[in-house]
Every structure is written in C-alpha cells, then in structure tokens.
Length: 314
Image (cartoon, rainbow, N blue to C red; front, side):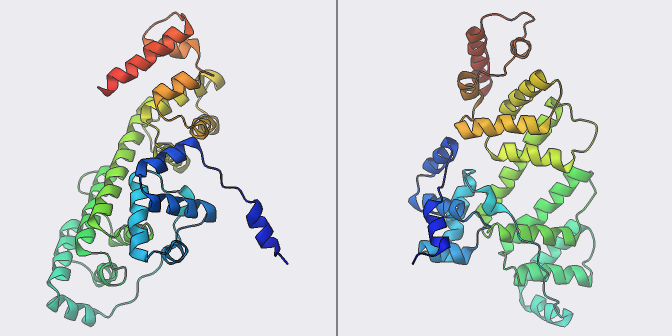
C-alpha cells in the first residue's frame, strides 16, 4: 500500500522559470544542474551531508558545486537561508597561549586582528578568534580576508576610523561557514558580489530618491533581492518608472510584482523588457528617458531607448 507521502511526492511538480533554466545552462555543468534541482525540490537550507548522500558525492564536492552555482547567481534562495548563529566553545586561555606559542600561523592571525581592531585583543576576543580558527575551521588566508572585509564594511558604513567588534567578525564568520565559503576563491567571489550589490544599492538610492537617510530593512531587502535576481540598476529603475507612472508614487509591493513578473517570463535585460513587456510604459516616462517633452510613435520610442542602453554598455 502506498503511503500518503508517496502519493504527495508523485503529484508534486517542480516548476522552473525561463531565467532559472538559462542560468543553469550557463554553468555548463551537469553536477551543478543536479544540485540545483535537488535544492529546489527540497526547498530547504542546504545541508552538505544530506546533499552529498542524495547525489552520491562527498561534502567537499558538494561545497565546490554550490560555489559554482553562487558564482553565476543561480543558488536557490530557499537554500541560502541561514540557521541561527551558534556559539563558539569556551576555550581555556592557557590552551590558547600554548597553541599560539607553537603555531606561527595563529600568531599572525592575532597580529592582524589587533591591527584591524586597533588594540590588543582581550581574553574574550582572543577566544573568539581562536574559535573561528579552531572550531569553525576557516583556513588562515580566508580568516585574513574575513578580517579585512569586516574592517572595510565598517569603515564604509560608519566612517573612517570606525572598527568592527570581534563579535561582528564572529557573526560574519558563521555566515561564511553556513554558505560553505571555505576557500580563498569562494571568499573573494562572495566579497566581489557583495561589493557589486552595494554599488547597485547606492545607485538605486539616488535614482529612487532615497537619499539623506538610511534605508529601512524592508527597502534594503527589496533592492538586494532584485539585484540578486540578476537585474541591473537600470532595469530596476525602469520598474520604478512604471510603478510611479501607474500608481503615482513608489509602492514597494507593486514594484516587486513588476520585477517578479519579468523574472517569471525570463526577461532580464532592459532591451528584453522594452521589447517584450510593453505594458505600463507611459508616454511621459518614455519621453523623459528620451529627453523629449512630446510623445510620438510607441515603437520608435522603444527602439531609441534600446539603442540608448546599448550605447551605454559600450
């Protein structure tokens, strides 16, 4: 007799958008495609051991394949959700001191952490650094990059001279481990994508008139999600124009529905959107983008806009 769960699994259908399929094909990797399908089918946070068992790989291979998916922006959002931060073990200071006396690599990490924080490490901070090194198992070169990344983020966010706490470094270390960022290559790629996202957010802050104040968590979440979907700031600005044209103001849920609609249709670039989703593009918006005051033939306007964006990319 079939169990109810068996019947449920038989009727469950996995639907992928055209954009998702395009991203998977771009990887040109059968293992990456299998991992993507596995993650989409489970709809859960990725666990290395479970994924390795299901796909007949070891955990190191799964982490490497996951890195390929992240590199092309194809890692499922459901698998990216992070578990609650854990606590590092309580290390004995004498044991840490003994380790430091015989481990030149750990000594160099202590010096770098002190340089970054601008003071000698306290007992608590020393325990945290050793926990990242010993318990989390991040390679030394990754920890060095982590420390400098945290320092740069704090300086950019709060001004030169502001330094992160060791607690903030610990949280970021857990985030990296939960994302399987365990190699220098994956760490550099992650930081590069984070920097690109922050630049996109800053560009959109100006375009959407969100200057002079900090973004709310909801505002930043929307902007981050749209950029993570692969949309350029210019494409997101187009969604903003359509939102304001149709509703009279910036309405986040409405704007999100526009972008989600494009994503479902596999429309990613400005050119694709203007050619295949002509709804909601008002005469006033098009005239403004073309630098004119009077509307004219609709298709001619679209052609000019497409050519304008092509020239911007050259």
